[in-house]
Length: 258
Picture (spheres, rainbow, N blue to C red):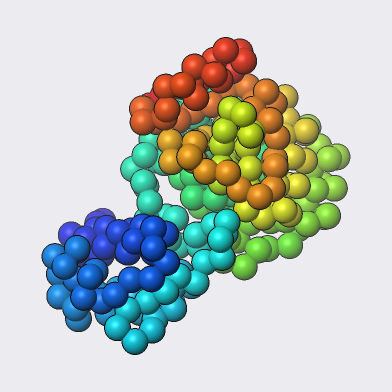
């Protein structure tokens, strides 16, 4: 159940993050004017965002705590485009047949896909602890755990154990998420270990479905996961750039816009 105050707070937090990304320094007075709220409310928002690791409060405002090229914490990404990610995840899951074996990637869209998969008769290998928690009580889902090291904050499973275990198995479909997506630069991730696990999962899968919200088309992260030619299907939203969609289709990649 969503409460109006929660939605408004999430919107304010997202706007503050955008302001930090644009200028790296924000003041309480500027934010209060831009958000049309009180300085008391802004200070409370800044305290919550500081606790999430997004910023550091200074006298009269805040500065970004994010390194250049670093991704936002999971808790903050959950606030961004949640409805769009849920729609993309549901559309991607609809392409999976009952009885399939599925590797489910980590990330916020991966978590949305876990909810969509929870009513399906499938075997799922979740690459994140939060997706495991969603699927653990799903009566029709068979769970297979890849092992590995849990990344703090992200709750994704990474490391040699996860990579090795994935390499000894074969799956029907990999549901891939990403930090950056480009027809020319490929699929990218902020974390090197995360990228390595994604590659291992793709290599073990017959096909790969990439779940990509349109904001990812404008980003490139440090670690290359794969070129887009390694992907079979892309599920994105209607705001995806037309030239990027055309380039993908020219490669023979099936694109669904939802």
